[in-house]
Length: 142
Image (cartoon, rainbow, N blue to C red):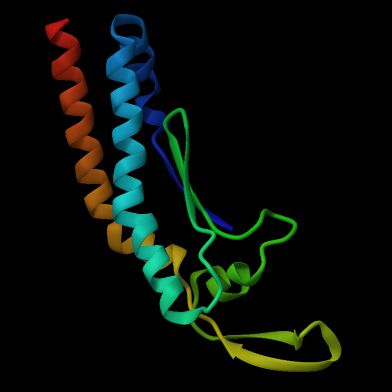
């Protein structure tokens, strides 16, 4: 289970920065991950903690200009997080009690990734724009 902030539109800029000043590219990548961590991941962790006694597995990962916020133990074993996220929709989901497929219960969903991205999205975009502006300014001074 993950949400992705994909900034592939900035690929040309990142490629040019890598050529001119690799240290500026590194700083830009760090800022991108940091803003998603602060504005999305931390919100998701707080929402998760409000509704689950399990330890949070929510992490921020960056690969190039793509920053992902992931929860769970992977695609094949998402754990409780996939059910709680419920595709970002409120409502209920059904599950077996302690794996006993003869006994099923309804449980309220508590979406945490989608709502966190929506709540923090504007701040992320503002921070990204500011980081790009700083990177361009720094590159022009090189």
